[in-house]
Image (cartoon, rainbow, N blue to C red; front, side, top):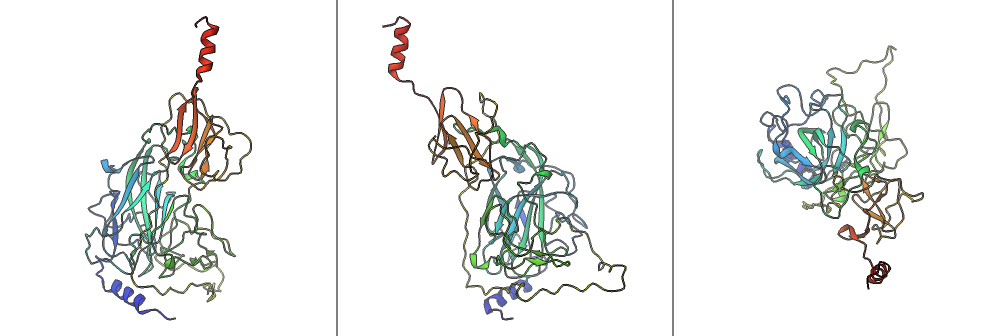
Length: 427
C-alpha cells in the first residue's frame, strides 16, 4: 500500500505531538465541569462512554450556565479549545433528555458535519493546547424540540491519526422561539412524542470504541446524518459511498449514507448503526461453549477503502446559509389546525408558491420552507416533514416570497363599500 509524502508527513506531525496537546475539546456550549474536562478521546473500550464520564472526570452537579440557554430556531455557536485537529473529520451534534447521561441514554442527532470538523486542514493547527484557531460552526435547536432540560453532545471521528472517538457534553435549557411578525408557526410543529421515540431524528453514530473501526484518511459519511447536514471539508476526503465504514465481527457492513440529508445510503448490505452504548471490554470476549474458536472476519480487499492521496493543504469551509428560522411560539387568534386536503405528493412544492399552491404531505428536504395554499392556509417543512395545513386569520391572505411567509389583510374594493353604504341609506 502506497502513501503520499504529504499524507505521511501529516501523520508524522500528529505522532510527534505531546499526549496532552494532541487533542481537542469544546469551548461552547460550556461543557459539564469544564475545569476538569481534558481534551482526550474516549477510551477505546468505551469505559468512559458517554461524555468521558469516568475516572477523574465527573459531571458534577447539573448547573446550566446562562450561555447554555438556547431558544428554538436561534443560531448557536460550536467552538473548540486546542490545536491538534487531526486533519479534520466528521462531527455530530446530538441531544438526550437525560439530565446526567448514562450508557443507556438515547442520543438524537440535530446536526451533522461531514468533513472539515473541527478544521479543514491536512494535519494540525500551530501547536497551542489553549488555542481557538479551529473552525466555529453554527447550529440551531430544531423547531420540533419541546422546551425543557436537555444534555447536548458533540461527537467527533478524526480523519488522521489513531482511530478515536471524541465526545463532550453540556447541560442546556431549551426555550420557545422568538416570535417574528408575519411568520406564524404551525402548532403541529410542537412535538407530541418523547425524544427517545422520535423516528425523524437519527441516533448518534459511534465508532472506534468497540467493534466498529474506521479507516484512516477519510472524513466519515454518516449512515444517517439527519435532516440538518453541512459539508465543511474537501469532497476528495469524503469516505467512498461504495465502501463500508467498518465491518463488524459478525460480518455486517456499516455503509455510508448517500450524502443527502436524512436518507440511508446505497450498498449491497444492510447498514445498521453500531450500538451507541458501548460496553467496557477489559478482556477479549469469550468464545461460545463449543471448543471451536470463531474466526475473525477477513474483509475482501475490495471492501476496505484505501486511504486517499491528499492534495496540498487547502483551507475550505462550506457553511450553507441557515434555513428560514423556525419558532415554537403559537400565533394568537389562529384556529385549531386542520388536516391538509387530500393529495400532495410529499415533495418540496417548489418555493412554496404565491398563494395558489397545493397542500403537501410526507417528507420534505428544504428545512424551514413555507407553502401557501390558495391564500387561505399555510404549512411548513419542519424536521424533514410537512406540517398540517393551518388556516390564516379571518380577513387575511397568505403568500410566499424570498423573505418567507407573508400574511396581509384582504383589500376590500371601493365599489363593494359604496354598494354596502347605499343599501344602508348612505349616499
